[in-house]
Image 1 (cartoon, rainbow, N blue to C red):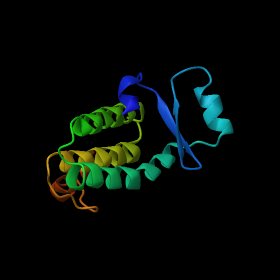
Image 2: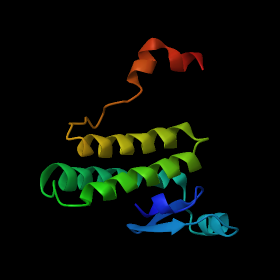
Image 3: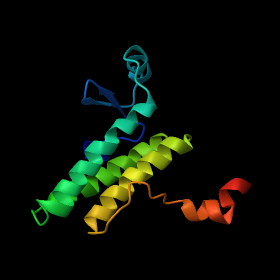
Length: 130
């Protein structure tokens, strides 16, 4: 959610189950180097996003004023991260799948953990041509 208010290029660092926001600046890369932060650490967001989306949007708290707005801001934050990592297709795909989970829960739809939003492209051969 907070990432939706931060400038593009802001990254997050996950260490000991804590999430740190690293804004764009001279020291971002230095801090990330010394803390051994990697963009692949974004994989650790999967379960918190999945559990919170199901719990707060689909089950227990559905209908509480403003809870959906928090998740809409989370989507904007994920979009900012996607823009930050736009040169890495795997990270972008992972972030888009997180967005898909939240959007499904916001719309009251079921989602499949293994659903691939781009499966139709594989079958049409579009990705193979690029």
